[in-house]
Image (cartoon, rainbow, N blue to C red; front, side, top):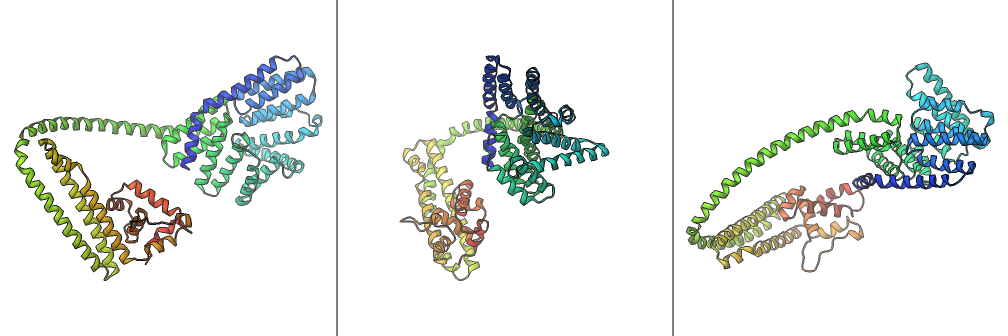
Length: 523
């Protein structure tokens, strides 16, 4: 889902590029039309321009349709006249002008239409009465429009090839209305096989698929196909679109206000460019609500920013005072030279204590073998204690370095720059942990690999007892499941621990969600 959103937003950023391609195609067609005096050839070229403008600009499409009607009348060609009026009717339907569409259809004489245009004629009437039925508030009118819609739909259904796009679309809608969603999805999948992303048809079919997942209460799948539909609309420069507006409403409900605001504004700009009454109505239901939420959140952020600036100003003042105090302290640091020897002795004493602690921890490990509960408790204690010793050692290293820097004692400075002590202790810590754990669970590596696919097997390198992935799983087996706690014990970042866990889980056999529960049951 995150990847799809990244693709969508990259396409949104390139909207001008796709629109320029569309405009260039139209310019070339206009140039071609201006070079011919043959009215019939002009008619066909203008038809291509109308197709380019059909879902790009209502006003321009209407302008060229009216030009084509004039050409058809000059040619006195009834086929051209009727075909262009049908195009006008379908354009009016797509933009939400249903009454005007029916008026345009009523100008066409049914008996004058050739068989090739009858299906298109029925489709126009069906869609026109469908829109009137949906949007009218008058009960009697709604009933009449619904009756006419059903009549034209039935007439159309009898004429269509069962495998045609329009026939499949009608079947899918019937199944959707009856809530037979699996059957509807099957037909939708068949329709998707014949279209490619970047076309109006792909946008429409994926949008209708999102409606099916909405009815199935599958929000993730609904979002997925809305995003695919929106990507296709942008690539095809379809300004008469619904997907990104619907996506904005979902983002708003998921409290992703930033994206909701960007998407609804993007949709509004497209609707304004296209001049679609229908889209303006749909957007009007969401735009004020999203804009208000975005404004309220922006106000809160401004307040937070103001408070942050005040706090930063306070910290800056505190920092200036601290600098002054440090400056004074620098003058007194010469007194500390005699203390460095004591610090070094304390560091040696600390190392000795740390070695004693290692022996003590080994002894604790032997005692843990008496009981599973005692083992797990003391191993956790052993790990936390060891991690704290390493932290303390690092603190002393930094302290010694501070004194060395201020007194310019080069040998001690070089000693404190080195992290060898901490590194050695971490290696010793890993070694003790690995050996202790495998003493309790000697078959742990084999048992883990039995839960993983062959390509995800965890192989320990020569010289290692356990690798990082196995240590993480070992801690999970001991009941330490928090990534933050594991990161503290193994001294990795939380993100690194999370990535290791996801990587191993993704190679699990069977249900990956229960993988870590199975790890807890090993032994």
